[in-house]
Image 1: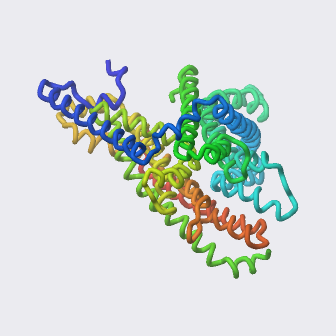
Image 2: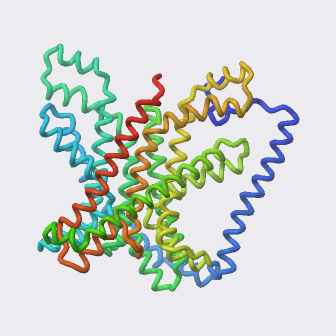
Image 3: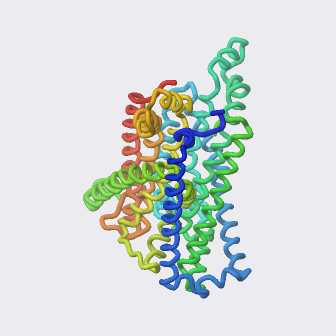
Length: 271
Length: 219
């Protein structure tokens, strides 16, 4: 019976009549508390004039949404490009990190630690402000895509490596003992399973990439954030536009997380 | 730009920037521990509305991009008559976001506890508070060490949002933008800041790993 309840619920015994009454009161009180908090927030919006129709009516126009969707296209373009590139780079760094050559292992380790250890904003400034000092200029798209790729690749390399480590040692020993070479073991035994293990967490990491695309704000690439900024000045409505934009980002990332969870459940991996 | 010129002219700026990053990181992380404990308490409380509110909090703040939240806090909140200074805004954003992840780490720590252990504890007569104190909290804390170490580094990286608002003194990322828009700048300006971040994160990870080895539960 206990197999179906989670730890949250297991903490509590089946309540008696007294506890039950206390629970009802507690639930009612806490509900009132939560509603009061919500009410206070909405009231603050109302008394500062942020619920006026002038602040929201332009969301009824198709053109507003077309513009926001155009921004979203920019966001996804960068996210998908950076996601794909970082996956390739991460794969290479992971192979280096588990290789037999000490020097290669060292270099990969330093690279992974470096890209995991610096904020993407710092790398954006590297492409945006530092490289142009050497007459090296990349387009705005790459100014955005490359820093995101680099920071994500450090994290992804470690995710991939955790997949490799999850492959049981016995299988590798068995493969060696039937005469497969090191490369064959890697290609035929380790990688196919390792990649399968980490697919859900790779998808979850895509959230980081989507979030990072908001640094487009710095280089003025037309993504969702940047187009929102244009709407703010067009309609002179800052709070509502940034609010809606934040909600869109939250929904996108929430859906990605859900997809990752659903997939890991379907593949029979614990989440 | 040579290293000696850079350090002579901007050395104290970098020192202040490193200290600012460290200070913001420490303050934020301390607050993150408090807030995520609070959120986790609500999430395991017996009252449905509190659970729901805390679950919604986590979903909102683990999915919102830092810049989006920072812009809202810095530019939109004043319209709602909430005015915070820039430093507080950056710390607030960092704490709100990182606490969502912190609470997730605590929750997965709690979920590693076997339900049979709780039932056994109840059978030998421990009450609710005793179960929490002797069984749930110690295990949840011990298995949260590694994820929290990563969160610590994450908090430091999130404070780089400080480069998007005028901070005085600037933090490590802002200082790169400051020097490169006013002076010759160059790759060294970037490398010094990057080194500040990377070395700090290596030290944090090292300490976290050591602590984890000491307290890890072998199952």
